[in-house]
Length: 149
Image (cartoon, rainbow, N blue to C red; front, side, top):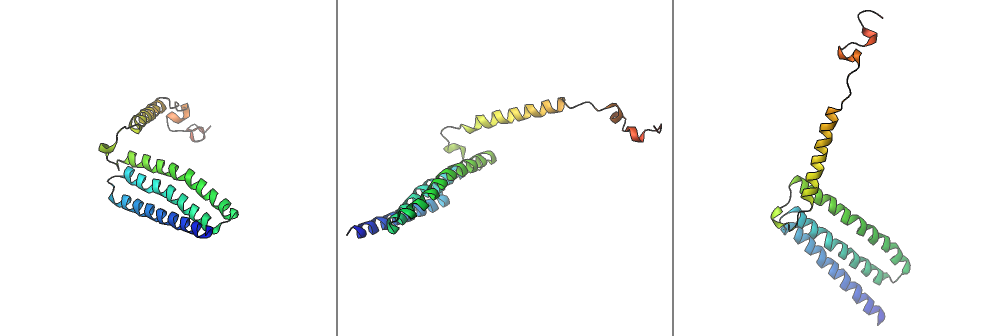
């Protein structure tokens, strides 16, 4: 009886993970801009992975299997948000999003400050170029001087 209950719980977890996968796929197709699509792709992915790992652990009923699956979930939970963050920033910088859906634009002022400081650095870099050496000013080096020295 207990085994049948665990098998039913595993089946429910797999079904819910499948529903989340379908919802993520529909969101990727239907949502209007990159940030919305990114949200649809990453949020259900992590929860769906947790449900899938839970279903495998319930089906196998082994501590060794559970210990092998925990790092999968941990690494996926650590890398998916970072990847989503970087894709979101790239989408923002390339204009692949609809700003009408943004409630608060926290990235815009940070990018403006970054571009201003980069522009300032470029200006300072051109002003502080080193003076050419005396032999380099006239295009001659010591070895090719007309005097033959």
